[in-house]
Amino acid sequence: MSELNARPWVKHYPEEISPTIEYDEKPLHVFFQETAEEFPKKKALHFLGKELTYEELYDQTKAFASYLQDLGLEKGDRVSIMLPNSPQSVIGYYGVLMAGGIVVQTNPLYMERELEYQLKDSGAKMILCLDLLYPKVSNVKGNTDLQHVIVTGIKDYLPFPKNLIYPFIQKKQNGIVVHPEHADGTHIWKRVLEEGTGNVKEVDVSPKEDLALFQYTGGTTGFPKGVMLTHYNLVANTQMSQNWLYKTEKGREIVLGVLPFFHVYGMTAVMNLSIMMASKMVLLPKFEVEDVLKTIQKQKPTLFPGAPTIYIALLNHPTLKKYDLSSVEACISGSAPLPAEVQEQFEKVTDGKLVEGYGLTETSPVTHSNFVYADRLSGSIGVPWPDTDSKIVTPDTFEEVDVGEVGEIAVKGPQVMKGYWNRPEETDQVMKDGWFLTGDLGYMDEEGYFYVVDRKKDMIIAGGFNIYPREVEEVMYENEAVQEVVVAGIPDPYRGETVKAYVVLKEGYQLTEEELNAFCRKHLAAYKVPHIYEFRDELPKTAVGKILRRALVDEEKEKQAQANEKTI
Image 1 (cartoon, rainbow, N blue to C red):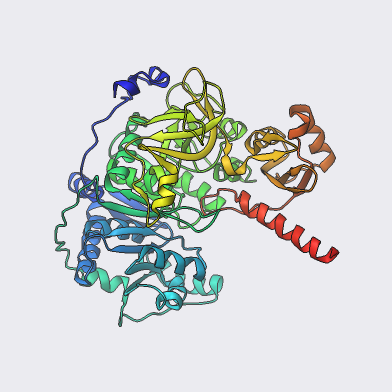
Image 2 (image 1 turned 45 degrees about the vertical axis):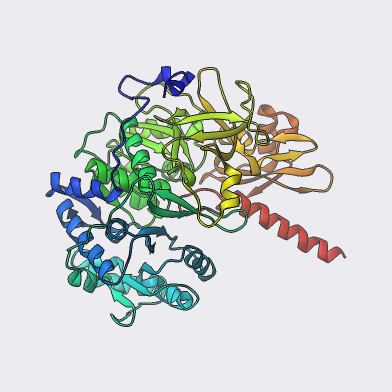
């Protein structure tokens, strides 16, 4: 640890943040038990008008865990959870861990092909899914190892009379109402909780060795990989979060759960942190701007982890000024670069703190962040978290580069994954002597602050010049008419690649290609200025609001291939 203390960023730590922490070597679910015992009557979550105390939530989790064990779940068995944010997603997650299983987080938006791939790759024996997704699960079940399907619905936790009205709303919105029966490997949620005894057989879990989670990476190149995270990985990153947010108080905070729990950032920054800190979670099953604004005004969350696109959507909503967002004290933005303009505007609106953090699925996820309550540097991802070492290296040789020089960001710490499930060769490509190669290009300044230049695979090489999309995007965000932008390299017969900008304008604003091009030329070297501009109503995004740059590039390649076919 003396080596870490000599790192330049440690001198910037406020005295309240310790550079090194004694982590609790306990299974993750034990923290839930401790919180339920210490704060039994405290509200654990709010969901569309329904509230549960920690005692109620924990009792239902024990009932679910015992039911899984009675079905034959053994230590190390994988259980898929395919749900939006809801009480069931919390109960399911901690219940699987309590029963000795490994959670496989599954995106509810997956199509059958993607679902089948993940279930087969993980070897999941059971799945907890939403009733609307039951037909999809049934269609792929025969091609997987699934033995049991547990089905629940949003209405299961709606207060009266919403629970009676909801099926009609569901039919109108989705065109179907699903009524599976409790038989032959299909289990209905209410029956599961009624029949679960709550007598959970204790499973011997070694936090540093035993896995808690398979978290699949986005799979923008090749097939998604199952990131293996241990109980200790997740406990360490959650306790780092507590340490970083040192002005928060156990039992006092209210956390807005907009980020989905099937994404590693929402899982750690909302669910695991809330459980550990006895916070009240305010859960929203999907992101709708007006719902979020109303919820903030009514439920008064103090912590609001999010992503840049979430904050951008709120800031640009026409009714924003109607709502009081002043309860929000702190936000750490993740999953994508945070434009400086967005940070400044959001802090004015809430009077709270919004800082950029950095992390990856493979690191549970957070490794770097700006200080929430102390000095921060706009444009920087901040400094490494406690017990986290980081350096900039040459990808091929793994040699550390000079201060200020661009290379690949490497990290080392207790939150770094065990590896990729069943992919030893791919694990070896990114793990070097305990260091994880992130695939992100960046640099460190003399003070120890880190900056992400771009994803290694997103860097554009046009006419021999290296162009980083993030730099171009930052400039374009400074134009008052631009709401969202993503810059990508598309094939070009002359330059190899050329720079294309996909732009969404703010409502009520107009901007021509010529005007935007002139704006970019004022602020960027000529070779970095986009050659093509495309205005769109929206951009493709993941469930957490990360813009899918690769989807746009693939779309462009497809267009060019079709054009070439026509000319042949």
